[in-house]
Image 1 (spheres, rainbow, N blue to C red):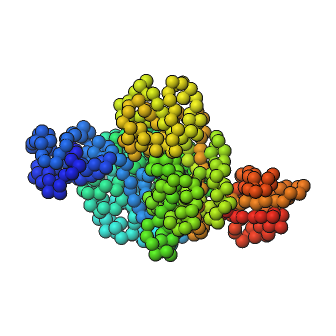
Image 2 (image 1 turned 180 degrees about the vertical axis):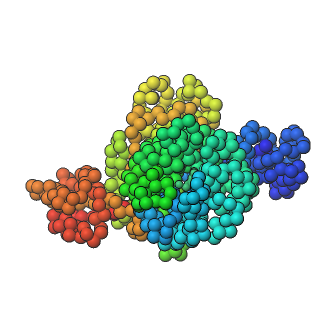
Length: 625
Ligand code: PEP
Ligand code: MN
């Protein structure tokens, strides 16, 4: 059961409640639920709920209806985030774990680790103790394999995941690896589950070969009941009557588990299919279905792999898959971040260099805006998002060092460029150090329980009304009230308390203010994306360098622009954006804003930049990112 506690409850009252529950033989956990303290009690207390309801400090008692308790969403409604070094599993950045089935040698492991890291994997997997069907085939390198994994961690900079097959390996695992995996065959090895529960290291718990979802959750319950909440559930296919694939991947498990449990869910398409060319389609589907991550087998020479070669991707295939996921992720409100780890290191280094801990990034508006979401998706929880009231104030705050970064929208796929920010990029001497694209989904948000037929007034940003025109035309009696930002609209209707008022904003804004989405996805065109850039005073060390942005003027001569474009063409550089903006104070003269798919600041493009300088009157490199 869950005991919801009074706001001003004293420590003494809490202690009293806890000690009663313990005496009744319950496992007791204190948590924050929607900003409120609750105590979760697992067990069968002798006294009935009414007894607990009247204890001083208790507001109400809610029974947990499922057989699994600690892992249940009823117990803990917010998503659990599992932290492995700089990597967070369960948040909006998709976590891809990749590597060979088994560690075969130091060279093999290091080589594959470097490849998968280059493609965007953030954790490395490799088995050292292999649970094989036949006792006569390769069983893994054992402890030597674990040592190799710790070399990978040190030399390549990836956290490492490996399977534990017996409690006797626990000490070794504590020493050499970052995440322990409980394999499908051991999902109901209860002594092993208790052991990893006590180890306290993050655990990936695979679904058993023929385990039901409830059995799988009960196994996770064993781990949590020992005090370890860092559990990631991994669906890897189940046994069915279908022999064509090695197993049948149960993708329904993703939305089912997301509803039942707060723990992150990842998918292993390699063991699920057993066939190399079936891995990428299922991986893409898993991300589209809402998985928090993937675990994928990759081998540089799968024909010679000592295990699971047939299902291992070539690095090139893995790279292609990662690019697909990069594109798919924003559709479902997530990101695949190619510079996930480099960003964390760069932010840490920045902190060391300035001697000030805690980095900040300025965004427009208030918590719950799309700018806020862009900020948290780009930096994860490493950087504090700081609300600022105008775009200019963001540039100014970065320039003056009040914040370390700023995040500003540059263009929307439906409405085009945000010119104010292009002008500010020209005016301020700051750099673009990164970019992030968000899908913009608008929702009609109202007071909990409100009905759409009772809505009279809708608050939002004027541009949002434009983007939801079709939906709003169907409700032409509604009064539209323009406000500065979408999250502010939700706050205003909340504070006003009038159930006839609604707002149009993001789901995040609804959650922040405890309001309810009453109509989802009301934007007219679902291909509504906004591209944001991150600005700073200096480039991120080892940051991404796939694109560059330039501003230049080419002079008022025939063929002047053509001459500059020719330079890009001759250097094989793909131009992805070209836009002209008037030069202030010089009527009918223009600056060109150009985005290129190249790191023009790298040495190899020096001659190209020299040539460009000769053909331009003014040239500013905004950054390579
Ligand atoms: C593995 O990950 O290499 C493995 C043996 O997986 P499973 O336990 O899912 O069969
Ligand atoms: Mn395998």
